[in-house]
Length: 354
Ligand code: FES
Ligand SMILES: [Fe+2]
Image 1 (tube, protein in one colour):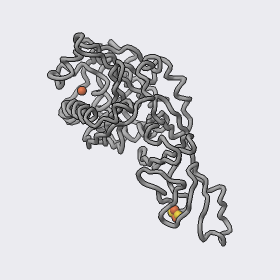
Image 2 (spheres, helix red, strand yellow):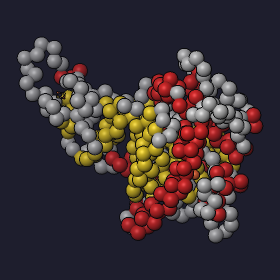
Image 3 (cartoon, helix red, strand yellow):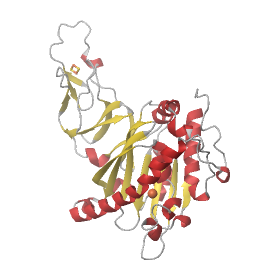
């Protein structure tokens, strides 16, 4: 990367020597632009849950780092397409639904769900119109754990072979069986990495969550159980037999997941969208078995719990964003309880210097 001052240059190759990131990493537009170009474009990022486009004909539009996309279900086969019209560029669809074709509302060019241009009225006198070459581009995508991942630059190595350890750890939970029971949306005025870092350590159970998670899963007993260049797993053992363990995991850079264990696991996916250097939109997807998701009282109770925990995190995240912008902020040393943060920083360091 061409930053004068690479904020990832000093990330240690050893966790016991790890520091927090310099403030520049959270506030500098040039750092954010470099992350967009290198970390996000080159990586695998989640765009939807398979259960959101479960039936043939379903479509779901998404804007990934300003790139308008649409996920379509073509007879059970999932496609991730650019949804920018091949005529003059209007996105051909917004929102989600079910359709036989996608028709651009501007001049009614009509696309099949696999992206092929099926019809374009009034184009017969053009000497340069070539219907076959006007398909919506299809992006590299992969399904893993019930998520649809996309790789914007099309150069990333296949995802699943790099996630073997994570897949083994989550096998009993079987995240691919969980559906979205509800979604909570929060405007989040802090850098995306503040959110990732908050998610990836349970050290702070002893602070903001002292009356909630700290009682069920004490922060000082948590540990990174597994990690690689691409993912981390944070184990959260229970305080006693009255409570259960939970597991937090991330696929870098942006896939944040949480699961309870046991016979009817529950999950959470923190989807970060509309990213800017100092803000993003957080959509918390509540994941549950289809049986659970069909019972409104269960879902309401779970929603209240997840919202309460997130609201405990909000003041810390907002405050950190303010603090790291101070000229007097200096990165402090990380605890062994924050090894997953070090793992995340290593990923960023390698992605940004590749
Ligand atoms: S811009 Fe889509 S049909 Fe003209
Ligand atoms: Fe938290």
